[in-house]
Image 1 (tube, rainbow, N blue to C red):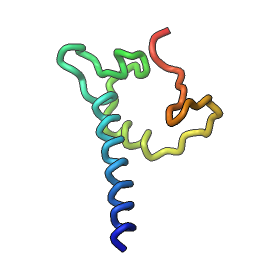
Image 2 (tube, rainbow, N blue to C red; image 1 turned 90 degrees about the vertical axis):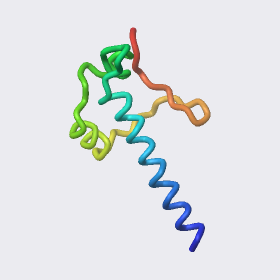
Image 3 (cartoon, rainbow, N blue to C red; image 1 turned 180 degrees about the horizontal axis):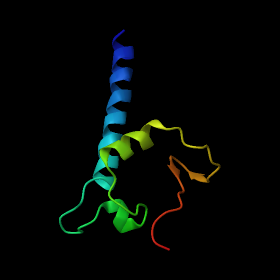
Length: 80
């Protein structure tokens, strides 16, 4: 029972950290940049609301066949 509870807590912790990082990058305007990190990188074109973040987090993303390198996945983003 103890291991199962630990695994559930770990899964919930990973989800909470992922939401925090997404909020930090897409919703929070940084003082020095005057834009979000995602906007500075060119991934987003506006500051996301919490509603947009939650709806993006709860919708299913299409499965793509992008190349993987170890634990990391290659994404198309950033400045061209």
